Image 1 (tube, rainbow, N blue to C red):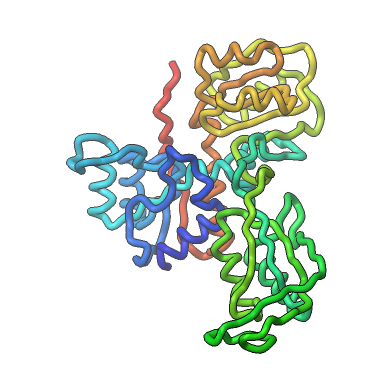
Image 2: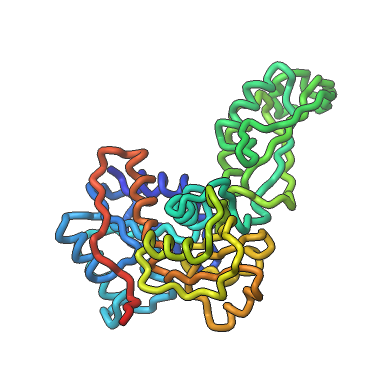
Length: 364
């Protein structure tokens, strides 16, 4: 199977446009035109993981954390990253990472955390902004359904749990073609009045090229008039963190003990526990301290994440319980997510989960 085929499927699920500015998701090592026969899925790429891929004849490593975060001026094997790069290249092993883009999508890292805890009514904690546009176009009345259908097929018209969303209104459009034109209706050099339908729908920014291509292909006019208008609306199905509700309220100690068991935590660092029961929980895989105020604003009783600093705990101010369960612990089930994404599309592809525990943090 072509490497491009697998990476494109991963990026359809978690578009690279959703990664944070500091991130380096995507293909890190490899040629998209090369064939791959099997993949190893891991949370981190270490020498031990590369050795595992070699031993199991895997020519692709799919990782959550990118191997390369910073610029590299030379590859001499002077550190762990460079050693992994040399060994992977020497053994024709490609490396791909899906990091904060996978954190940001429904069905990704935070969805899996919610699922493990058993939360319901889950939604994005901090939706992204400036990612939605309104597409407005004008279509002859007899072609409105075919154009609308083409736009929906390309991914336009999704609002939350609803798809095929649009609005239309009737009116009249005018145009006049010059001598080089080939008008669908009307006569060259003469102004034409045509009954048209104004069609409006929502388009996520990352889907704009495909949606516009579908518009132009399905529209009968030689020159297609359309507007793309930026919206202030948040993209509620994409963003960092999630919130959800427990099926039944439970005591804070009971919930933390349950979390400790589910995630295999050696210890949980937390703020003072309240007398009231926990109902609403916010989660963020990895480092989530920047979401504390957002979790409070969303009325969460408990915020589960990792990498809280000493002064971060003061931000709770008895409004919320902060629970640091560990970076690795919070993201360990990401391997399951990546495996399911690939096998759902390619059920016969040879894929295995890494057995290497890459957590660099140990407890005495």
